Image (cartoon, rainbow, N blue to C red; front, side, top):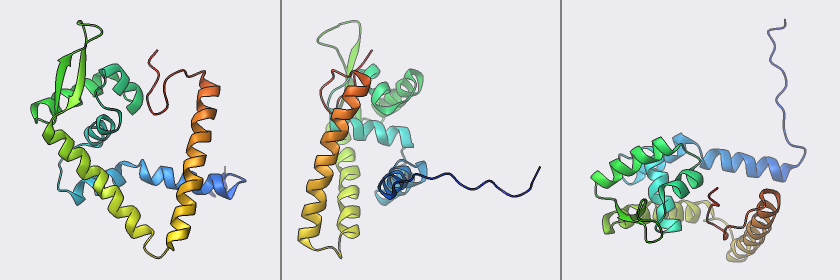
Amino acid sequence: MSNEREPRLHYRSDLVQNMTSLLTMWHSPRFHRDILTERNRSLSTLEMRLIWTLGSMGASRPSELSTALDATATSVSKAIAKMDDAGFIIREPSPDDHRSHTVLLTPEGRRAAQEIYDVGDVMVTEIFADWTEEDVSQFSALLARFATESETFARRIHRDTAEPGRPQVE
């Protein structure tokens, strides 16, 4: 057996490689910790993602959050309990099923979520600082088009009937 490492695999498409690199960085726990450090928040990555997701999706059932966060029901339940104790979220009886509950942000939770969004806005502003307004506008339009086509593709391969941006709960 050789001590040499096998060559790394890579995509043939530079576009896919670049998107993968970006998504890998943006989803990394280290990146999330760095974002939280910007706002002096002592939240775990899952807690930060929970607050961000509730800010994006609005009131949701724990099962929807587990799906959206790709996390176990147990870990989401623990994060919900911790965020409830910290005053970031509240749990209310579900209007559709009184056996379950809906999770939503409190005013303090909305402020925390907005801080996370603000860090993203500052980051993108800094990244695009040397771009022309026209380049940023064109990139934004192309990215919106790509996102729409990606959602269409995802619905087709998953036979997903959920509305865009909301997970389908099975």
